[in-house]
Picture 1 (cartoon, rainbow, N blue to C red):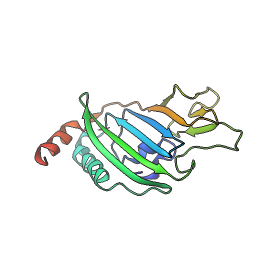
Picture 2: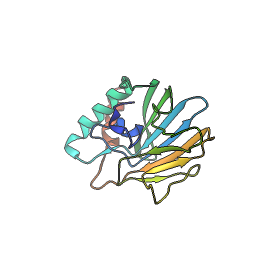
Picture 3: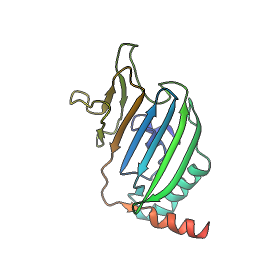
Picture 4: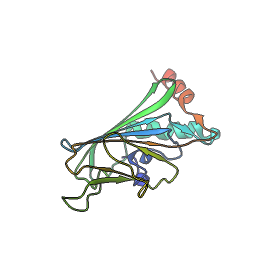
Length: 170
């Protein structure tokens, strides 16, 4: 996935060098071993690096960085609702590759983020106060869905640079 910096802030952070995102919505299909991450409102905290950050994202979309245990990786950048977004998809070999932890077959499934500033939400799992940076799912679940929201201050959207790129590269 585009760099393992994500390792617990989610596959989505891997997509980023300096670019950041407002939210990342994960959909993990355990039956078909497919993962989809939608990154919304790609932006930078340093306006002077907006062109560089977009170049990084475009390079990842053209040739996604390999990720251990994940194949068929595809990255698509697109505009939606006045924001630059990205869709990251891949096929994973096992739970570990998808960053899902299960202690034993009777334990719940768990995904965690190391980003203490992020907010984790889910309708198909559970986030507890005891372990606020993790989301738990029933051990028999086949579809895991959750969203990681990331606060941003003084952000500069990368959409203007993306539109300029698209206009000059139809």
